[in-house]
Length: 255
Image 1: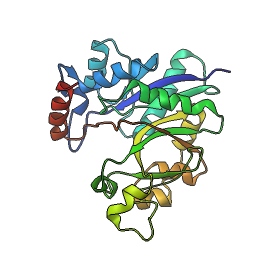
Image 2: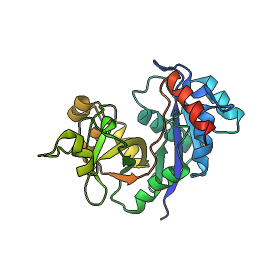
Image 3: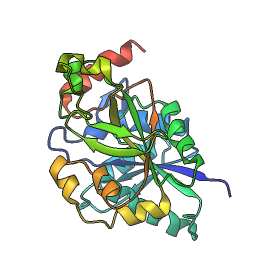
C-alpha cells in the first residue's frame, strides 16, 4: 500500500515575542503564505491549522486551505492532531493505515521543498514512526548554545537521544577542538508522523526527560517511538521575533 502524505502547518496569532507573526509581511506576502507555497511544491495536500479567524481569512484569500482549531493546545503537535481529525471527518473516512502527516511550523518561510521530500523518504521502512531533520553545526558557538538542540543517532539514522547539552563529550580534547573531532548533528524542528502515531503521542503526558531538557521529542523516545533523522545541508531560518523578520527581509533580497 502506497504511503500518502499531507502537510499541516500550525499557526497561531498569539505569540509572546511576536504577536500576529504569521501575518507579518515578508516580500509582499504574509509569512504564512511563503510557508504554504513552499510546502505545496513538495506535497499536494496542504492545510494551515489555526485558532484565529484573521489567519484563516488570510490563508483563504491566497487560495489556501485553513482549518479552525481550539486555542488551548499545549503544542503544535496537538493542534495538527485536532486538524487531522477534522480533515478525516470532512472526508468521511480515515486513512491512518497509510497516511503520514508532515508538520511544518508556520514561521519557517525559507523551508525548502527538498527538505520536506527528505522527510517523506524516511518512511521507506515501516520502522519509522516519526521523522525529523538534522544538519551540521556551523561553528563552536552554535554547538555550545542550549538553544541549538543536539541529536545522536544510530548507524541507520534513528535517534538515540536529543539534548541541549553537547553530546557526545569528546574526551581528551579541548572544547574548541570538539567540532573537528566529531560529526555533531544539529536538530531542526520539522517533523512527520504516521497518522496513528500522531494520535498516540498527542495523548502522552509530559515525561521526565522532556521536562528536564524542555524538548518534546524526548517524550516520544521515552515512550518507545522510533524517530528517524534525515540530513539536510541547509539549516532553516525561523522567525521568532520582529528582529528575525528584519533579518529575513535582508536574506530574501539575496535569493
